[in-house]
Length: 230
Image (cartoon, rainbow, N blue to C red):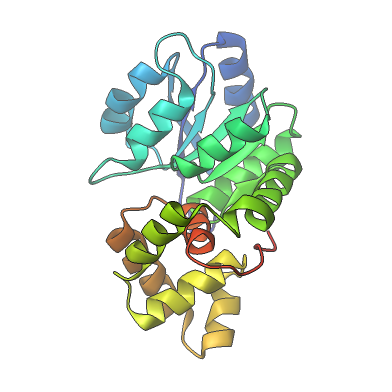
């Protein structure tokens, strides 16, 4: 981040040693501040309200409320809604897709190098998708397979939802689904980066989605195009 902006981070993990390690790791990043910790997904809603983090690092398996459910609750919030990066030991395909479909802006495994986790937080704060190599492969395989040819009811529902968008918003959403950046979309569609951002924001609001990854998945549900190049 530039311009003196500090990224506020909430750590959610039932392992105190993991939280301590992450806090120490972010201590070396002058633009990132750990504003709080939670040991269970059940504590996330209150922590987000009180601490107003920009990014939440979320574990999956916790004793009372798991990270997927907590992520879904964050995505459903009105008002302040931080980006969520799921950071977990478990990188099974089902876990990855559950996290992304329920609103996570990214998915990383805990053995990701520290510098990549720090970079991921910065990217998530900018609204960019953050995926580990395993998560990216899973998403590509899913999009190239059953998302490209989803069951008819799901495809029909997705197309009906996309009907809420203007033609320009649909064009931008399709470009997002290809994995293009805002600058690349602006070049392709002959508009400013600010206009692209406005269209993405409008599409997310109209479709009640949390982030670009959810928009990309829905775009693929609604079409037969090839998968994104994340």
